[in-house]
Amino acid sequence: TVLVVDFGAQYAQLIARRVRECHVFSEIVPSTMPAAEMLARRPKAIILSGGPASVYERGAPAAPEGLFELGVPTFGICYGHQVMARALGGTVENSDVAEFGGATLSVTSPGMLFAGLPNAQPVWMSHRDHVSRAPSGFTVTASTDVTPVAGMEDRERGFFSVQFHPEVLHTEHGMEVLRRFLYEGAGCRPNWTMVNIADESIEAVREQVGPKRVICALSGGVDSAVAAALVQRAIGDQLTCVFVDHGLLRKGEPEQVEKDFVAATGVNLRVVDARDRFLKALDGVSDPEEKRKIIGREFIRVFEAAAREITKGGSGGSAGPSPQSGAPDAPEPVEFLVQGTLYPDVVESGGGTGAANIKSHHNVGGLPDDLQFTLVEPLRNLFKDEVRALGEQLGLPSEIVWRQPFPGPGLGIRIIGAVTGDRLDILRDADAIAREELTAAGLDRDVWQFPVVLLADVRSVGVQGDSRTYGHPIVLRPVTSEDAMTADWARLPYALLQRISTRITNEVREVNRVTVDITSKPPGTIEWE
Ligand code: XMP
Figure 1 (cartoon, helix red, strand yellow):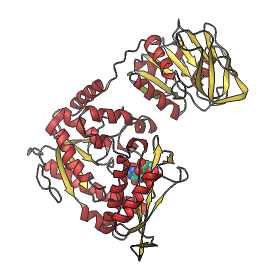
Figure 2 (figure 1 turned 180 degrees about the horizontal axis):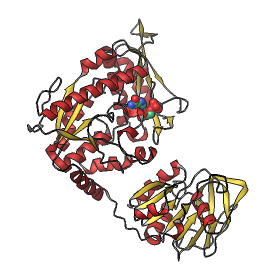
Figure 3 (figure 1 turned 90 degrees about the vertical axis):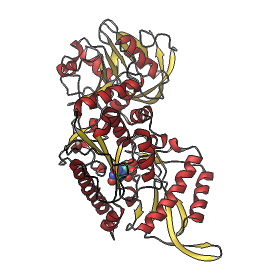
Figure 4 (figure 1 turned 135 degrees about the vertical axis):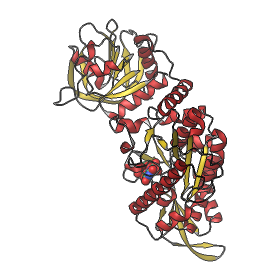
């Protein structure tokens, strides 16, 4: 493993992902972790990340005591470069001029990191302090107009560092520099591949659950689908998946889970048709938080009931068809619950375990921790793009693997106003048109998410075929984003917007107006509720 020491969250995750793109496994650890604990993980290399602090500030994070005596090859980036310089006897100074954005790096002595690369190369900088003198034993390898020591290395001791950010795309040869450190500087081998990830995870699941029975709540989303497919591959019929159809899904989604997913995986699936129950519980409710609470609560009840049924080995769900119900008849209790927790959730919650760490957002499909199950979290080491690649490796249909993120409460929070069956039908039709046209335009992977929202409590006047209409507006909310924490509105081509607008107003009854939301996040959120 390669340990990425975190001096400031956002940088560390990107570095860890880039290391994995070099097919080397990486983990993020806090800069407060004692060096001995790091050594216990037997790292092949250590990378010190960037961070927002200044090394001389009071309370600024420093390298763990003894880190540079571990004998592990170490690569400092940005703040990590300064930490390394300072710890080993170099000098870090505050500059008058900051260096933010693009800069030209001049390679003065190529060393190992820059051998064979151009002498002048574009790099991405983001710093105010700089290293003005390298520690003894180091060779200065590169500089810029304002940064005298922009790269340095002590090959003998296995120390390398750069002031710029090799992990960002604007640094043209960044990946090459990173690869050199990993392969040549640290002797890492590129064996973190999807085939190995799948094999290792399958083995780990088998080891964890033994002959015991396992259940999984399928939401139709990417994470639970990939987690379930993986566990199915590992333990076959010991797994039963439960899919709660709460009636708040988009057009075609229940079928996708019931048919395509089952066809691709052969999983035991129990479908619980709880549409009426959810509609009844939501009757007359328009407050967004109240909707969320109700949906979350009902979901848990329905899921628990299904879990009890499965444990009893009975065949009847709470309601509805369960054509694939293949739970074995042995009344052995279910001990494990599969969760699609991803690595960023694990990192953000300080590396702990368990459902308690899942963002309160993910309250639907993410179950409360007082459920009496031990969690199986086969994706907890993976980033989203790795989960998608794993899904493809496991043979899941690309419509499932490449689905946009979809909120647990579903269309329930995309109807502004109370949720009714009619309103759901209207929204489902409008949403289906928007998605269809986006796909037809080949832009699926260019947008992060494309909520379509029905302003059910708003009416406006229109005219259609010579007569006055008084209908509801639909809001299109296509956004681009990296991680849903921030987002921008997607600049969809006018021709596409026009097609969607024309089709929705022509084909969906009750809708006579289509608008586009052009708010970024912040200040808006992605969803309207
Ligand atoms: P916002 O609207 O806060 O959404 O910008 C950020 C991301 O989270 C999704 N989202 C939810 N997911 N339960 C969920 O499981 C929720 O209650 C919920 N609300 C928002 C949203 O779709 C976006 O991807």
